[in-house]
Image 1 (cartoon, helix red, strand yellow):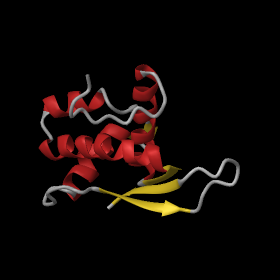
Image 2: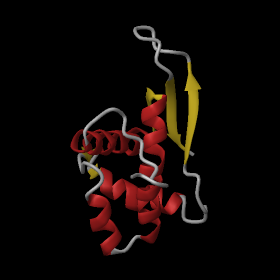
Image 3: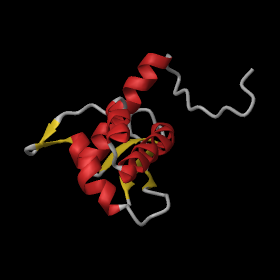
Image 4: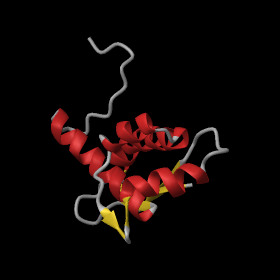
Length: 121
């Protein structure tokens, strides 16, 4: 039984769900905001905020732990992980939480699913 276990399953198997959230988090930290469905944005929010909390800690253990949750791709002479622990971690060092914001967008034209814009505050 799943008593008091909140998980956004997104209609996917566990391995597919982990890969999806990892890719969404990587893109969020690369561009600062992404447009996706409302369900995916709500699932991404706690995932991304946990990574920012690790970045605020900034030690080696936190960096290695965060490396498991993002794809460390190259962006403009740096990597996503360096950007998280360098720029983003320092930016939110005095903030207690609430690092992301979700805006509702008009429904998608093809299937009328709820769309959202999730961005770093």
